[in-house]
Image (tube, rainbow, N blue to C red; front, side, top):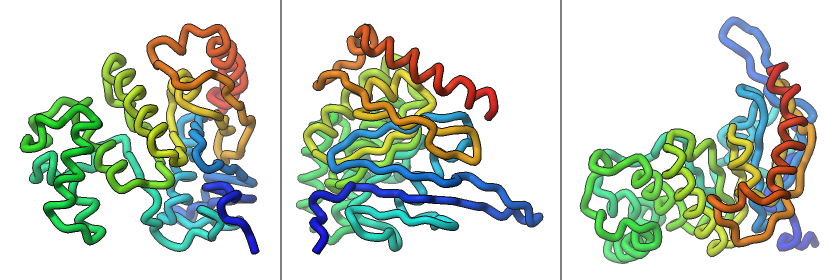
Length: 263
């Protein structure tokens, strides 16, 4: 019998993903694509614009099926939406007509928890992300960074074993972005889950991740996998000045540059 505790959190093997447009034209997003993410690992994916980075996340969630190949999550084939997976989008998935605490409590209530218990847990998560005084505010009353904290609380309150993140901080200013990156690292370290983080920001990828996967131009396949040997815990405002960080940035950008030009 397979020991599921030792299998990767995510295992994608020999994936090809082909789309057919309304006019009948075929577009191949991924080709001969294989990657794995270990349990508790933070993996960042970088590549040219439009190469298929977000497509990999859709395959993991089950929102998209590969044309060929297989996708396993926790040792089992993906078959529909998995409640163990959390997703943080570039745009906030927040209900504008609900208060902050009601937004955060929505997940546990959807899973059958009583309202009072869900709100008590939501209040605890608002405290963890520094929004304990804003539970009765509405989303339009919050700054971009505060809304992103709500998104993180919404996701982590459900204790996801896998967290998928698609350019989650790209709309934030640099100062707020750095604060949110630190917040994410602290929440991830406490959760023990696996993360797949898609980004266009090479420095962000290196600073956050245990490994960085570089994709080729479309049709995307994996060009190189870099294991990031930087000590944890990491402070985002400091790690970028480490000599080893600078070396990684140069090596990965040299690898990525040609693909960006092709893309």
